[in-house]
Length: 369
Image 1 (cartoon, helix red, strand yellow):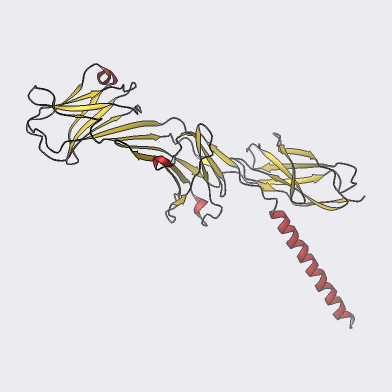
Image 2 (cartoon, rainbow, N blue to C red):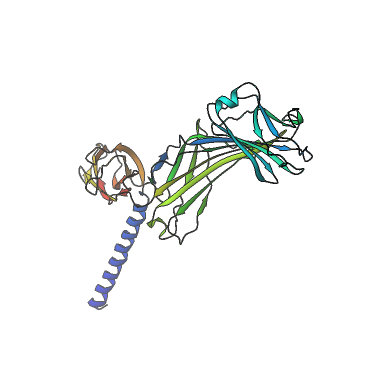
């Protein structure tokens, strides 16, 4: 075989070998990619309101001049807003202070002369304070005679709805694939209440429609809501701020219709986290199976960005230890004793809300005996 041909074949085999090694290293390196961090968002505060609705009878005395509302529960220091609707249109509205609502006897809503007529009517009252156990009945008063068309909550169908809206809070930095834990007093959607939980992620970039997500409950008390951000977000989705919204609720019918809903919607952003670089240095590249060597890692970020979090150390794709990162970005680990042969060591910074995760280049460690 001519020397030129032989040399070409040797070079070709070498290139294939180098390519295989590069591919292997690339595959190994992917195994060290840190899992996206869990972002914890407190969802406390906000407002709670309860709306109580009772249908009026379809046949009423149109000469009534006042509506008397009797309540057996307190308004918890908040105001109560009541509306008498006729054919779904407000006819009379009134706002009562907690003192008025809690005082002995009924509160009164005046009705203009001739305003009433037979038809589908509802009395709706809403408490800003979140009262959930009102026992209320109303009566129409005709020319001061009292007690006309009295309807008791225990005897007639009614609707009761509670809605809690958490404060949005500041914007939080998230990343594709991140786990977002929305803390707070979320109510668990029990099956007997026809429970549900939902979430959406919406980019402010008008090109993208909201992404529907399926949150879960971790089962702790107070209940939180866990939302998993997809890893395969559309290209360009993360270029602008976004809104993460979540809700849970349920409903039940038992002598009336009850429903509740808890919701949160707040600003989030991608890419606001500073990029990081992780570097790894081994105490030595050669060792024995009778000794333990130290692996030292350092994570760096843009100037002015503080580093915190955790550094994970891997040997041959296996996690061998996790160390808190110091203020200067450094972390060290005493590696376990390793068997004879060649090993690959990688350090991975997990990342935080403010700093993205990163992995070091793979370092070779050969154990001789």
